[in-house]
Image 1 (cartoon, rainbow, N blue to C red):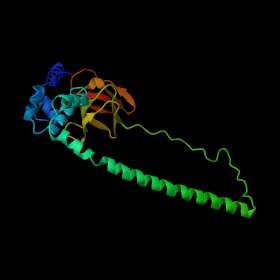
Image 2: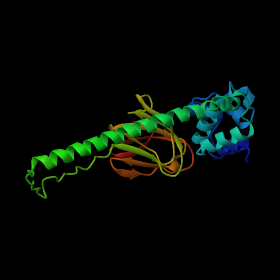
Image 3: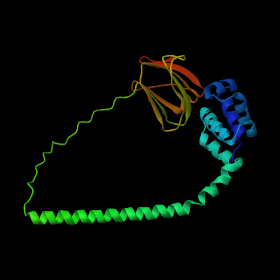
Amino acid sequence: MFEIGNSLREARTRRQVDLAVAEQATKIRARYLRALEDERFDQLPSQTYVKGFLRTYADYLGLDGQLYVDEFNSRFATGDEHDARPRRSSVRPERRTRRLETSIVLIAVALVAIVTLVVTSAWQTGGSGSKAPKTTHHPTAHKRTTIPRPHAFLEITAAKGPSYVTVHRENATGRLVFQGTISKGRMEPFTGKQFWISVSSPENLKILVAGKPVQVGGYKPVAFIVNKTGVHGA
């Protein structure tokens, strides 16, 4: 068990990010972010909003969003979400029985069809008395040439943890091509010549430009431009 609000506030303070910047990056109103940090969850429209905002805000701060949702569920979640589950489960045994019966019938039909096919083939082979000519296969006949798949111009991988990422073409006012959290282990490729990028947790990311790694250090949110010549300040 841990304090949801205090850990969010400490992570934001450690990164030297104020609520206005976090609001702009996550698209969550600052008063809702403040409510999450104060654990005043009743000020949000519903528990669904609380969980969604918790996940997005924690990921933006370089934390594990799912861990915060699980902690909220274990300590605060109440109401219809939990009451509805037993009622839905009351019809499951009957549905499972019907599905099992249907599966058994389908398997039986398939077995009969297979046996019939085998018997028919054996009868036809035995009655013909002729043997099919052998086919000579050349070792090189089925060789396939593997063509290396080219890298995308820009590849952003969340190698160490999640990060909230925004990507525009050309510059900060260019067309938005990606906005959201890249979860740990996931890679997002982009094709083009130049991109403006904003990341919340640069220490968690591995960035390749034209197949070559680029260094974006630090533990604070940062924005920059990448093109064929490398990384440049935004």
